[in-house]
Length: 346
Image (cartoon, rainbow, N blue to C red; front, side, top):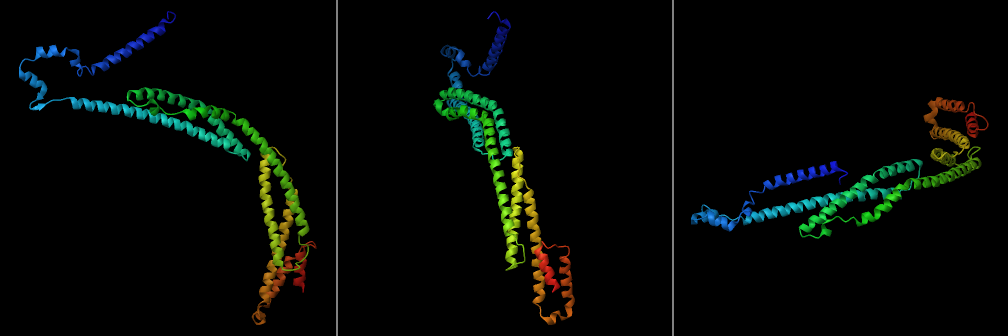
């Protein structure tokens, strides 16, 4: 003690200030307890002599004064105040407990989430690091709950209530907290493992896409119409449209696979064959679309009677000129152009 006189002086100064504060508080109640400072029997015998003296202290005019109800009211109010203080303290502790439970629920949801892209892994990692930073704050919340529980138990004993009823139960939260905080701190390592697994899955997707693209190109090469229609042209055109739609799906899938492969520094699939097949399919579709349009126009005129067309021979001439021009510059590798040329040359 002698080695720290300054500290001892501070303690004494603080104690003196506290006692002064208590003395000031005592003054507020001195008038109410003054009778307790005197010997009442002796005081009454000396101060009162006439009946009126006693009556004056029993009554105010014609009313008898009794402080029993005042005392009961004060006691009731003090009891209600103490209960309100206990209830308020407990509500604060319950709210802080719910804060801890909500934090752990959010963490468990994060643990159970399966990231399927690099973006999701990055987002999960960022969220986990934010929660790790919040562990210290939550530890302080737990400490505050324990402090409140300590006071709740002490105050509940003064009201005749069981301490267990007043205190906030942290048994489950405390049991889960240690494992939760450990898992949260190790979450980054788990994300790296997920990232490795996802990279393997992306490599598999790239290989599968290459196989799908090769298969599509092979089927198109075998089934592509290389001459005029042997049956209903609408059937051929419908099949070509299916291939065009499939090309669109392959293009969208290629963009997705390439994006994910790039995120993992994996070589993306070569799309040169897709570009070639796409161009061939679209050119073939355009040719057959022209043929379908030609058939519609030809059939429209063929279905009209000669009398209605007699004065509109120019329409036939325009039709032949239009489709003759449509075949210009088309090579022998365009079967539809050859068919159109044959039709308009008849």
